[in-house]
Each structure stands twice: as structure tokens, then as C-alpha cells.
Image (cartoon, rainbow, N blue to C red; front, side, top):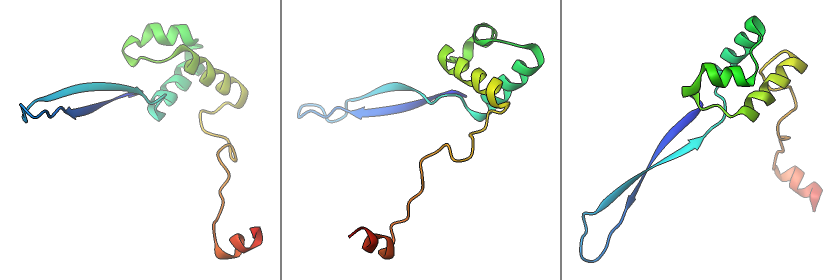
Length: 103
């Protein structure tokens, strides 16, 4: 599911009433899940769907058109929905030896 629903419970405590509790549902868009990406890749390759067709076919998914266009561009350029090696943040190791090299 591309949209995860988190339930945020706020306890509103006042001096007069200690039992009042309001619940607010917070909707947080977490992007496209791996299952969504596989589905999009399959339909893109088999049927040639574009972003508009995906949004029309799956209105309950709440996909963002720019996210779909970004993924479809990535599919056209690389042929995969996976991250490319080295595309993340570089790893650093904080050891005593490395710290001494800096100072």
C-alpha cells in the first residue's frame, strides 16, 4: 500500500477533565511500495500504460502523477525499478583510527 495511515492519539488533559481524549488520523504518503513498483513495471511493459492510465485504472491507490512519471522514466532509462548501485548516501566509519586522521 502506497499510503500508510498512522493514528496519532493526542491526550488533551485539562485541570477540569482528566479523561478527555481526541484521536486524529494523520495521513502520511510514503511513496510507492515495492509491490506497487512491480505492478507498474509489469503493466508498463505488457500494456504500455502511462501515468494517467495508471491513475485512472487504480484510483484507490492514491498515486502521485509525478511519482509515476519519475518511475516510468526510470523504467525507460534503466529497465528496472531497483536502485542503482552507489545511488545512496556514502557509508562512513567512525573508528578511532579514522578520527585520528582528521585531527
